[in-house]
Image (cartoon, rainbow, N blue to C red):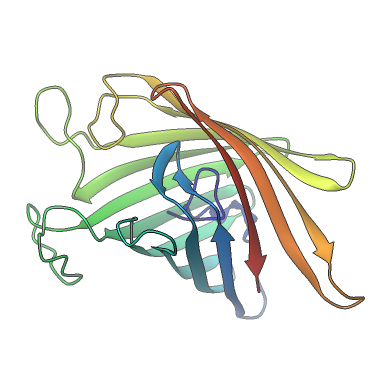
Length: 232
């Protein structure tokens, strides 16, 4: 879930500006752990990205597959987004290899028998910090304390800054309501992370973006050290 990730795979449209030409993204991340919004979804993973963007609109495909353990989460996401100025909105179709369909069929969209999760997001980048709100509105969502659809939501505040030769981002994410999707019984802090990234020069003309970070989930009493690199 859209993407290098300490909170991962999540798509954030705030980095997309109105392009005069169609821009294409082709990249892949290798990470030692797949941690998404404070949840542990697997060990060493390959996470490819394919996307196009034009005049603020973007369409991206993102996936994750475990390289060390066949039981790790397999995922395929499609995100449609729009950004203008600091404002952004988007819709993501997440598909996982586990869910309500025991046969793991991708084209199974039945409301109560699918492995898809549909999520909407809205956010604003103020420059010094950004805020994003994500809410599930369909598919294999979690349930609340009454056993009804929770419309599971996640809110994240992120602040980028530079320190020495690296780009850093500090983030705090919370789940505002009870939901089995995030394993919370009410308001909970599920993600506190600090991430650094920089380009490592291999030759005079070639470098590899490398990132590392610490992620803690106070609600689940878990903490993770994440490292990875991007091929693009």
